[in-house]
Length: 262
Image (cartoon, rainbow, N blue to C red; front, side, top):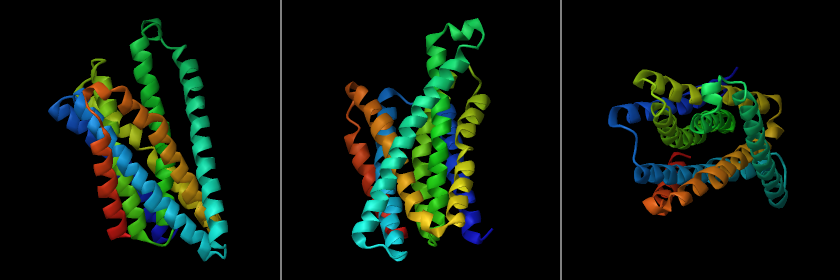
């Protein structure tokens, strides 16, 4: 395994571990109020949008051109990969919902009959599983032969993992979990990302021609999460203030980091 492959797995581990930091923030400062949570998720959305385009889509087109594709064909390849990534994430979301509901039906009666508990467990399962393609995005970014691109992607995903960890810890604290257990649970939801990172590394090592597809696929998965989950969630909490300024701030900061680091 070469150095970039190892960095891809390490980078995805670092990004995933930041969910634990989100748990620590909540346990030390208390659960964020609705307005602060709205701003955090808006910021995360901006970061992910910038990371998808500047760390994944644009490098994916460049990689496709480097393998001999025309600029037009390179764009078609990456666009197709983005659409596949979004479709796969949509199917994964539906699968998560079916699996979770089937599992929750087998829980003890006191929990199966509690709609709020079921909603929290379903949310945590969804957060955990959607972190896998995020880890894949980090692993693939490192395999583009540019470590700075990989670290930029890891940073972007890591930043948006912090409010995810905060959300998980805050949700579990409402069930009466101790501070330590809430922090560990938040951390655990992100520790699946190295598995995704290893998957991304393996795909690219199997065939360098797969790199543009893998970059586009990862971007599509990230953009789907933003458009289907994060932005609608902030819109539903509009009475607590618009998240648009935070989204634009996250977009601008991540754009600057991607360009300067890359």
